[in-house]
Length: 425
Image 1 (cartoon, one colour):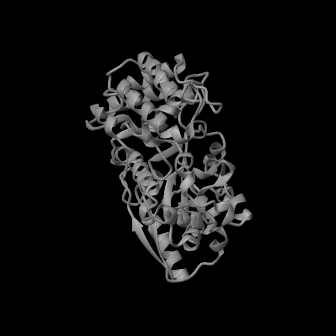
Image 2 (cartoon, one colour):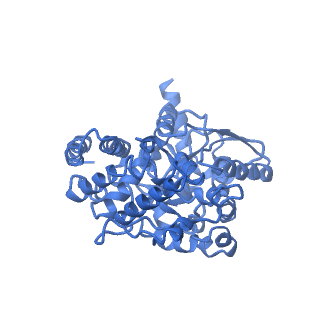
Image 3 (cartoon, one colour):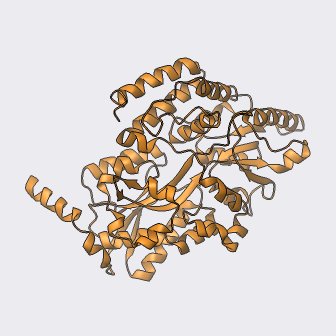
């Protein structure tokens, strides 16, 4: 049995020449998750492909949390399961899962690859293999109640300190005026990957590094990182509700969209919903870069996004590759940008009049994508998930008041040294 299994695996590993033959009648399973309307957009795009090609698509809805998704994918792929053909994966997972995926360079025309943002292609590349195709890019944004800023004669905050001051002022005034549920700032504070993203933005905005530098050096235990987490701890139950410690993206959006927050940190997907026809804050919101970490800091937004990868264990590799190629095409990315506010990974779409009409902030957003902060996924490779888990767990302890930041980050550094085997990632 072991020899037969090895033979079958070898057959799959040497199958790229067959990718060009796409036949009708196959059923391709797509793991399609999403926030807000993203899941519907994914399904609509896949169904369009199915109608055009004569194939069928079966959808799998993975767990909501990124950590749970990754654990499920690791379990399925390590077992050689063919249950899922096309995986939607986070930009930080290629180093963890890439060995299980088809090399898209063998399956996709080079001109198609060249359309995408270089940063996204880099994120999808592991040891020279393109293990996924970029589907949409993400970057952290600050959503602002511009009507409240105008009402209280406050400018858009340039620094976290200014955000804290303005949030407290407007929160107090609005509560006094009758909205007792008003909060100053909502974000993603649950102990999961979203907290890694938020906390990295706080730290990087104060020039406190990226947890682990590109050369593998562990840098998180430094005074600027301590300052960043200490300041964020001061927001809890003051300008941010205590419940923010259990918020993911949708919980934060729910509070902001209901009109009960002045500022929100979220991804671009939220724009279509926040400014939608039924939104209580429609026409009252602006989207701006996240604040700097003080006058000597910088605007820092974590690069996010999703990729589509094809399992080597798929029984329908040519069709699965064709589905991934269709879902990441310029036409499909344009549709998703217009209907769902999804950030294209194809730069040319940021100049498209229809895309800009639907997403007025995309013009400015395009300029910031090239200067985002990367999570240390490339430097830490297979151990990134452990690094992130340690970081968001320790950060959550600081935010919940269990441990001071300085003590926690010193302990975190020791843990990362162990995970890295003494810096040998």
